[in-house]
Length: 611
Ligand SMILES: NC(=O)C1=CN([C@@H]2O[C@H](COP(=O)(O)OP(=O)(O)OC[C@H]3O[C@@H](n4cnc5c(N)ncnc54)[C@H](OP(=O)(O)O)[C@@H]3O)[C@@H](O)[C@H]2O)C=CC1
Ligand SMILES: CC(C)=CCC[C@@H](C)[C@H]1CC=C2C3=C(CC[C@@]21C)[C@@]1(C)CC[C@H](O)C(C)(C)[C@@H]1CC3
Image (tube, rainbow, N blue to C red; front, top):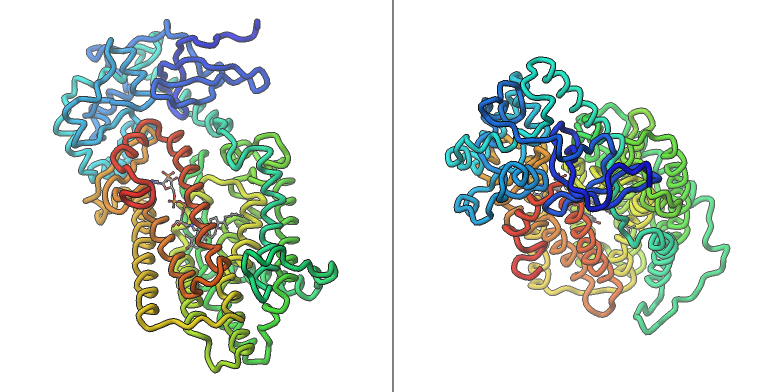
């Protein structure tokens, strides 16, 4: 192939995205269509690079420290208080490669210091910039706050510095011009990284999987809704009776759903509440979000109470559950189609990683655009946090009223009260801590497409309410000890869930938060660190553990007569196990062997000593 400069198996130097640093990589593959080389770093991290980001190894050498008069990364480090200054690389892709070029033997893992202190492997682009910019004291402060780094600072001799000074020979010793060229390169590389995100493997079963999920998810919701309406919803009583076609559609139901969504839109755009910043995007930009979810929930409760006071019959929700679900489904399909169409016009840097497979079904399902917005109105954030989530509580409340009416009760049953209160607490907590959602996977990494639109508008309100629906016509008495045990379980789960989510959110927002200074961290090549003690040192997803305990507490009040009210628990285990593995791959890609280090230190994923 005449146009291919580097061949498979060639050892070359690849630019680390977002920086001007080059590391040794092996060429795995060249894609003629995208003109991208797939390269692999020494620790197994794979990236796709443009030809201009690859140089032949012959043009590189490690710069001897004595000649390092310029503001090279290594030298900048030696002036700053960054941990990178004082530690030696151990195993990130880039650092291993760096060490491999400058030393005959790569850094040894058996290094005694490695055991107790987590080491910096590479100057992260952000850190490099921070040290370069003397005015940026914030970053230095952050590093000071990390005890693990302090240990490193004391223990590592400066002589290691020169090992990271990898640059092209022609740049050597060229004072100001060099700095300028370097800054330009860094800027270019950043833009390239933003514009051409590295491709990631397709999850959810890839393209075929997308077709499957597009058909299966709506069918499954329909199945559940029909099943819970059966007098005997046991598995043996299969299939549930198919209702007449005309009963799927009700214009009034569609009207109610549209009104509800518009009401939530109105509450969302009111200039009430805090404007919170999201995490930095690949372009470096930080979007602003109006986090007034709790306010929206309170106003919605007042509005619903007023409507009931005025004689509105909420049992309509129970009797038209199917039609309301179908209406929401139609809206989610319309929304997803709009999202897919508009994503065609989105700039490359606005797309989620892996969101552009080129396959219509997959991209429609998974969503391409990361943060689709109409002016300041963030569609993904709004859909995830408002109509479906608050709607879930409204439906639960309506089902409690229906239970009272059906069973001639003066108050809802204990089981119904527990389910209502538990789930209300879950939603209210999510909305109270709305800002925390900005550091979750959905907001940071996932595109907005059918999966989330359907999940937010149909799946959450019409399947998360199944326990309450189940209880409407199936009285389930609870003994006082059972009641106490279930409440305790819920509170324990909630405590773990809230504390761990808040800890991660606080750390991501401000790594130098004095309240977190006791926590150990592992620095990574991206400039972000990973918590390795506290909640995130117990298991890799303590928040999932808390969430699962809560899910158990939601099913227990419904007893053990049927599987249906346990559906949420089963689904949730599958969802979280899959989410955990998706997150593992994503973090492995992002953090390279710093992530492996974290996984070796924190061995269990969700349940200590079990999983
Ligand atoms: N009820 C429901 O239906 C659902 C509820 N949930 C709940 O939503 C919440 C959010 O979940 P989800 O978005 O899946 O995942 P997380 O909130 O756990 O976010 C995962 C991200 O956190 C960061 N991270 C991972 N490990 C560490 C660490 N050691 N130190 C610092 N940061 C770390 C990484 O992002 P980075 O490093 O880029 O910051 C990672 O990608 C959870 O509580 C979950 O239980 C989730 C799904 C469905
Ligand atoms: C099968 C299918 C269609 C899956 C879609 C998954 C979505 C239903 C969930 C993905 C992540 C979610 C979160 C919440 C609700 C469910 C979805 C949208 C959440 C808003 C619930 C309230 C919590 O407090 C939370 C804010 C942490 C949570 C965030 C993730």
